[in-house]
Length: 332
Figure (cartoon, rainbow, N blue to C red):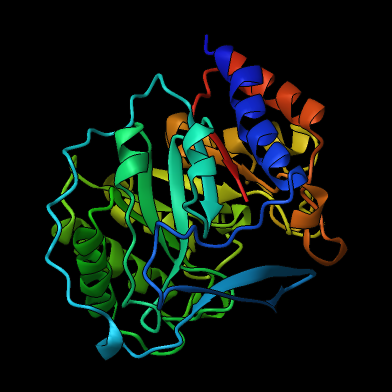
């Protein structure tokens, strides 16, 4: 049915990134893409624990050597060109990066998520025009690992308005929500995400702008979280979300490291969270479930699980494509 996703998406997802890494490139801002005050920061490692699983994820930050008042005034850019919701027949190839150098222009990525926005990193400029002219969608990804906006008491409506203004000011195609404030699930986290998403869509209407989320696979497990985690978010605001970049890695005993666990029958501490189980149990369309994987073994933190070699992942994409899945892949 959609067999093209088996080799084409997987190879396009993996090979450009692997080649990029092998050639010694690092994910630092390109010289033409950002002003002097937008500088690469450093990686810190944060750890969160849930039941029997411990996961860590590197948080990439941008450091600001100057205050917001040091930024040269700029004119407000025009809104990005109108975009339509992603074609259901087109598989997405998503990358998270803090690099907008020219090298990415020559890859097959369809969606480039720049990481990460938060309230402390709001006053910087992204020139995405060359990538948009090449047919790529450029989104800003918000929060990331180690950032806890809900626990910290951020107002969801205010965050949404600030984030929408950032998107419009920079002429981007939309926003990705990489929310990893796990301790707040069941303690207001779900409501916070729903409010954030509703306000974002109010400020960033469809089809001109995309809104995506990047939940961890276990966040779709029925009964695992008292507040429902992303089950509740999808029920209340899923119609406002274009697709999910599902993080199928760094989840301990729920390893998602073979086709059976990834696609059909998840194991370990987070049951019913494979791609087709999420679709069949929760009714989320297959074309909204992008499979997120680390593209090298280094992407798996501290001996956790989830990495798959390219040949194994190609086989999983083939099997999924034969059964109607065509959402695409996400690399991190």
